[in-house]
Length: 145
Image 1 (cartoon, helix red, strand yellow):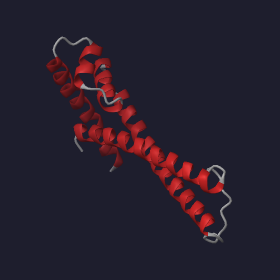
Image 2: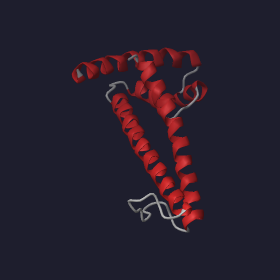
Image 3: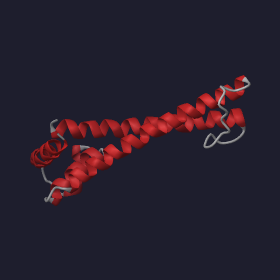
Image 4: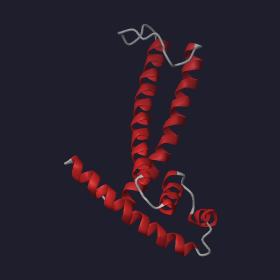
């Protein structure tokens, strides 16, 4: 996998996490309106529920639980990306990749924050940073196989 694609994937994971967390809050709100309590630990029987309300509450809890597992998996992938960036010896490269992919900053914002006079200089440094991460990714993938 190319380093650029790896980090683009992380950016899309961040966006997906926001949506998943919003859905979890939504399910919790619905659960509150149905059960009068939180969806954190409902009394779940082994049957599908003795009433439509109980069945709906169980279904919401199961959906919320599945979403939370997905969030946990995404968080692990983001931590791996943070570690990958942390392996870089060059502090500037770490900053560029962190701001661009993990914090989702614009090129202009990164350029201003890091004191580049010309935004094109950020692109060039970004390319070098990706090349450095590519070496780390290649080593990481070799150790997995």
